[in-house]
Image (tube, rainbow, N blue to C red; front, side, top):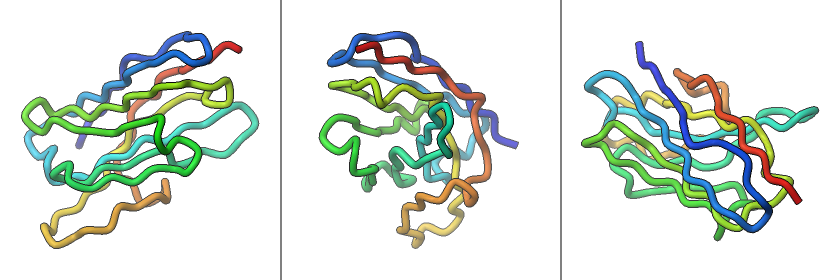
Length: 129
């Protein structure tokens, strides 16, 4: 089992920044690609960003490209989401998720939420206009 705990959410004005953190349990953090998803009221959960096991590859939803940055520190078992230039439409519950990728040759970063194995409890991000 992998436990994921998000932190860093809160209330921020449009144009501001937040840095989300996701701390993972266990000793096999580097075997998981990591993703961030979000769910706004009345909407389906959507992909935000993902990072490969080593941190060498990233992928982003088009609406956050240039504003958000995902990164990871495998020594700390932590993945981050730096969010800049926040907009009211970014308001959502943000979830950290782990995608088990046991093969070093696995290079595909996946955006479908159903393939992820473990999920955090979510952290609320609210952006005021």
